[in-house]
Amino acid sequence: MFAGGCFWCMVEPFETKEGIISALSGYTGGHVDNPTYEQVLGGYTGHVEAVEIIFDTRIWSYKALVELYWQLTDPTDSGGQMADRGSNYRPVIFVMDEVQREIAEREKQELAESGKYRRPIVTAIEPATTFWPAENFHQQFYRKNPKRYKKIQRTRQQFLAFQRLQTRIRGWKKRS
Image (cartoon, rainbow, N blue to C red; front, side, top):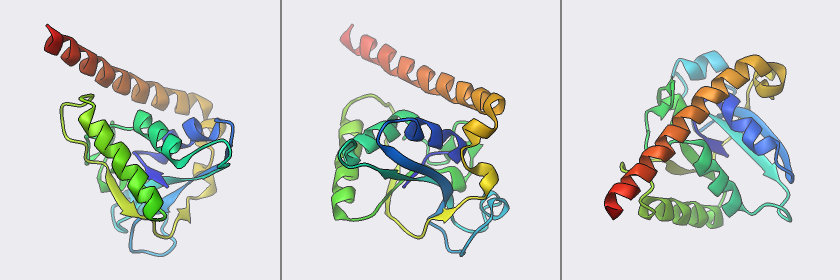
């Protein structure tokens, strides 16, 4: 399970890959059973918007999923992602067991040491809790609302591209 801002933007990058069986939008990490979108959005439940990924282990490793996740989020922003602000949008990797925890921690450490980001990597790594599927409206949003999704996706991609450009510029300055 991965949280990284609005789940609308987290489903498509996973779901469209061969070997991903399901990418389900939902809520996890909170203290209310069967929360609604309005409750989570209002910050009343402690949950984050997340995606639950079911994958074919013959095609995908958990490490590869974590590597894809890093490309979709700003791991330096604990207050949300891009325009999605609030604790319900914070970046979290929810791990199912110690093996996943070790992989996620190692990948996080490698990202921190890479010099790619100027600020610290703050993405949380937490034990997985009950995953509550979101309402049907939120499932496969990118397919049901292609124009709206493309606008949201474009803004997110521009932000992440800007962030990558800043990293390259910092690298060039260091070499000069």
